[in-house]
Image 1 (cartoon, rainbow, N blue to C red):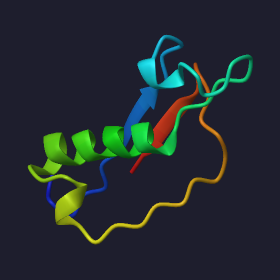
Image 2 (image 1 turned 60 degrees about the horizontal axis):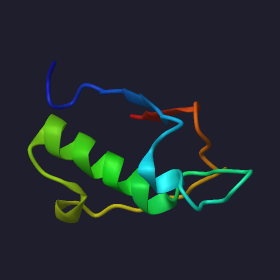
Image 3 (image 1 turned 180 degrees about the vertical axis):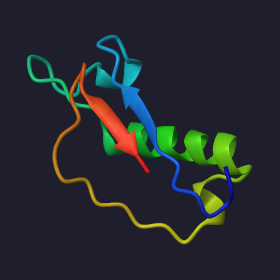
Image 4 (image 1 turned 90 degrees about the vertical axis):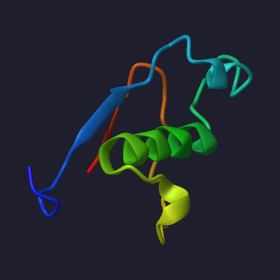
Length: 73
């Protein structure tokens, strides 16, 4: 795969993810900081540098809930 190729990554939010505790009882959602942490790790693994090295903006269009698949590309 070349550097210009599009890479796609997916993650299914585990129901027991520690960030879900307290966010919110009876209607859990994954905090944005946990999503950004996941994206930072993906960037580090894939490209050898994390989000701190990039000019990055993020917009979350809907809540992320346990069992849902998150896609990054």
